[in-house]
Image (cartoon, rainbow, N blue to C red; front, top):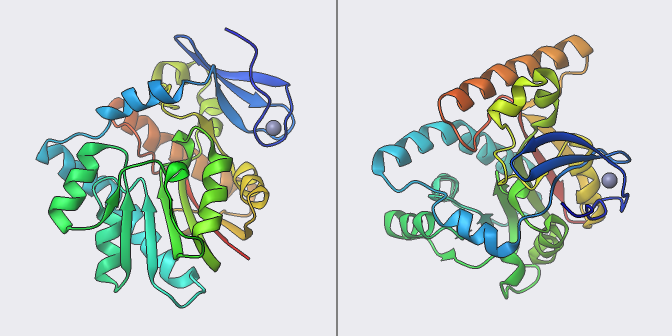
Length: 280
Ligand SMILES: [Zn+2]
């Protein structure tokens, strides 16, 4: 195992390990607390992993829909209440089977998707006839100042270069445009569970390349030109007193444990958070 790359947020080279599985390690930056995988899988490896990432059996897709539906409804409400531009053009990056696109279209929005998984892309196109880009956003030629909203549900933790992706999103958003990110916050749970967490592999190794926190997600959004960053858990603001915050983590951990034991993969509702930010 070679030396880790500098932290993408603060350039520090000091880390402490928080999780290990096979040849992979998760390292927490001692300066900014961003957690990242080491060594980083190559883009080619990732492409291979993701080829069979989304299930294509109808029964599995229904299960997926049931799991994601509360997140979709909640995200849609947040888009409507927080969007400032007055326009209704939206891009969902990593649109999966298109459930958020469908929800937003039913609310009168003009929607496009992007999905690198062929399974998700084919489903979204044939089921709802939405336009779905197939290439990663970083390599896609899109005009500047185009979208009112760009969404990423359970995407940012999988991305090879999240800074580059967010810079691109900033460019294609209109001034005042909104980015909405839904992301798992795994590291506190790993801390609570201690040695047990290594058996559960809550980072879904090596799919999660990063584990963000409200602080690190704010920092990366500021760094890529966004402002007015706000983070919520499941539609509720972070409880302010310590006891509430603690209990929400405990409940998060139970939900997550259950998902792991039941073979759940990506969706970790108890500890996930939603963050929005605006392009100035
Ligand atoms: Zn750092």
